[in-house]
Image (cartoon, rainbow, N blue to C red; front, side):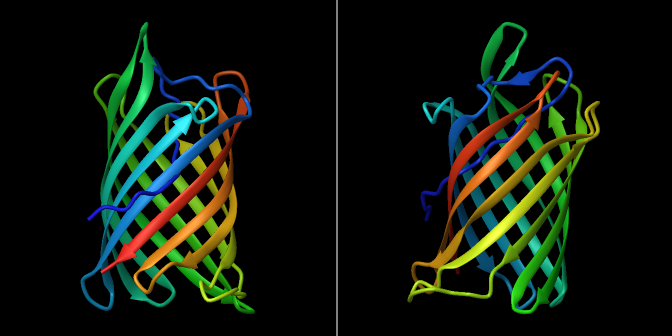
Length: 221
């Protein structure tokens, strides 16, 4: 079973290559689909697929498959790991085509509560393997705040999130993603998110922004 979903984009800053070039302020659409399987009370396994369109949502340039597992040590802390297979439209030399990135990763997530606001702080360390340029490491940290309010029978819940990216190749802090949106329940086992994201990415000389309209759907078994 597969569910259509929306949103995605990764900007690689490695010697000898660059992503498909988009103008500053580009409008993009991302779509993400997740299938989550509960192994036991503490362990979950998830499959994810994501699609991204840039150049004012006219150019399909990114697709990934992801398989990961998470284990809750307690209600405040969980650990996990997985593998992501990425296909991204990139120009190397004079040739532009979809190229492969293999990305195993580990995660650690802290959970908290502040006057009803749900707090989540996720750290993620990725090893990025390419067959057309040097491999690298990347660290990502995402902090999310979910409001305590839920509206209508769909339990619509607003949230804010910010994620920073640090790479091992040259430009350390090279990307920031700020997003705001709503999470809600479609059915008992199907959840969805609709959000806006401002992505700022550091190129060779300057920072550029992308305005992203995203959706995410997750079915739980």
